[in-house]
Image (tube, rainbow, N blue to C red):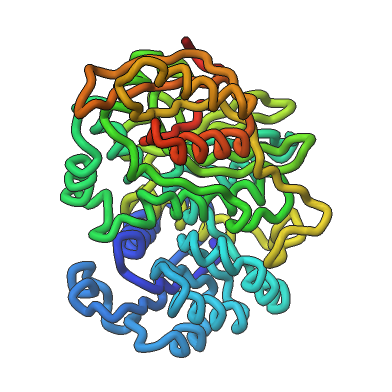
Length: 431
């Protein structure tokens, strides 16, 4: 006999609408393949127009979260509102009433999973969030139930479709950052205020969640070094292409002997690396395990139905598993005291600098790097002199982050040089 499961959906935006449609359209398929009879028992949203568009029955439209959790037919509450205001209050209310929660809310999980999980444990219900990271790419379930035999040493990926679309258009069509972003907004890939995406906050939240799972220890977002793509120019991308690099906004997590290293920033990566071919709004996660070796998951990182796929996968998991699994680490608001984080990590660098077009300028720049213990792999002059300035692109060998920051500060304060762009190089530098 099929198990009957009632679902409530909070929020009918892009993801919520896709979730409702997926659950309704696939009802018979889930009944046949998973032996669960899943029905939508309640929907909560202020937008009545959206209700009409989706042809939602009047008798399942709820007026408040209290009405939703008081419904005895609701077993699982799906939150797709977003943000940490009403969404946090609604999720907390549902968990306190013993309702299992499925959410796509990355910021909520990143900042408050410790608090929400504690409530879930106390009330013997589940908290699932596959859809919070990388849209339709099933990375959380893979880490928990596919790669659990491995010690994960490294995770690196393109976690944000907006920035990847912008960088792809800049690389393939020569568009400026501004033009590429405007196109992304017109297509619905970017918000009217794109700060969360282009400044790396979105990727930072996801990296916090995924690295905590991968490394089995709490990795707070406050430990993540973050830099966005707003300073990237077509010049930088073209120079990288000449050297065989693709430019991506990468989220990087490494579990090393020195400690955990977590960072989000524009990165040059060899065009032979699998991540280099991930273009437009697609996302990918590259994982290194001690037994399995290298694994990469690739797919749509956002969108109504791809993200709904991840939401519904959690609904099905919760519906078909009586045992509830929580975090495999001590889920607290801060990292454990014995966990070390590496801030002075090692990387090669691309540095674009404006210098005076006079004899000895290159020697002065080289001298600053040398005094800071940084070895130069290659130097190239981009174009001809303009307004008495020339543009140099410097590629360094691997050095420490602190040494590079020291060198850049000295150049900017020197009077003969002005740093325009700094980009990390994840591979060995190429001359």
